[in-house]
Amino acid sequence: MELTQADVSDLLAQLCPGDSYTYLPGDVDPQDLTDLLSSRYGVPRTLVLDGFTDPTVDVSGSAALLLPFGGRAVKMRAWAYGDQWVGTGTARDAEGAERPVLVVARRGVPEPLAVAPGEDVDWMERLIRITGWTQPAQRPDVDWAPVESRLGTALPSDYKRMVETFGEGAFDAWLDLNQEPWTNLREDGLLIWAGTEDEDLYCWRVDGDDPDRWPVAVQTFDGEDVPFDCSAAEFVCRILIDPHHRFTMARHFDTHSFMNYQESD
Image (cartoon, rainbow, N blue to C red; front, side, top):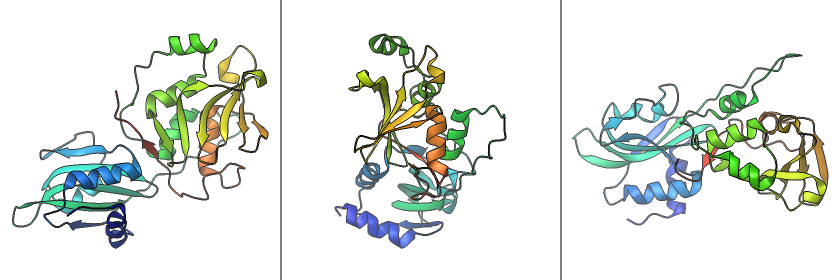
C-alpha cells in the first residue's frame, strides 16, 4: 500500500482528538509512514528500537505513546506538534504478530510563571519549558569563534544557547532559527538571527560592545523596523505565549514546540 499525505491526514483525523492508536494493514510500509510524518513534523525522536526503550524517555511526555502497547512496541518514532504527540513504528498485537501502528497522545506543556518585578529570568530555561523540550542538545559543540570572526563581533549568549540546544529547525513550524546570523542590512546596524514564513526578519540592533545587551528589532516584510527592548530568547518566549504581542504566535497554538530539520551532530 502506497501512502500519500492525504492518507496520513485521514488516519490522524480518525485518531484525534485525545489518546488513541490503531494497528495498520500489513501492506503499509512503516518507513514510508515515518518519512511522510517527518516531512510534516521534522526529524523524529526514537523512543523504541528493536524492542528496547530509550531510558531517557520522560514518562510524563512522549512515553504516553507507548502505553497502549504494554511493552510490545518494537520500534517507535515520535514527534511533538502543538498539543499532541504523534508516533509511528511497529508493535506486536495480541497474537504476537509485528504490525505497523499509528498513535497519538495528548501533550501538555506547563505555562511559565509570570515575571515578578526585578526577577532575574533565565529566558532560555523558560523557552525550554514553554516548548516542552526534552531532547539532548542538538549542537552542543558549535565552534563559535570562526562565526564571530567572520561577523566581526561576539554574539549574544542566549542565542548561542538556542542554537546549541535546539539545532536547525523552527518554533511552532513557523519561526526559523538561523544557525548563523547574517546581514544584508549592515548599513542599518542589524544582524538577522531568525525569520518567519511571513518573511519578517528578527534581528539585533548592534548597539554597544556587550552583545547580551543588544535589543531585538523586527524588519517586517513591508520594510517597517519595529524595536523591542529585550533579548532574542525573551522575544521568542513572549511571542509564543503572549496573545497581545504584535508578532504573537499564541493565537495559532495553545501548546508550543520546536520542529527539528536535521539529526543532531
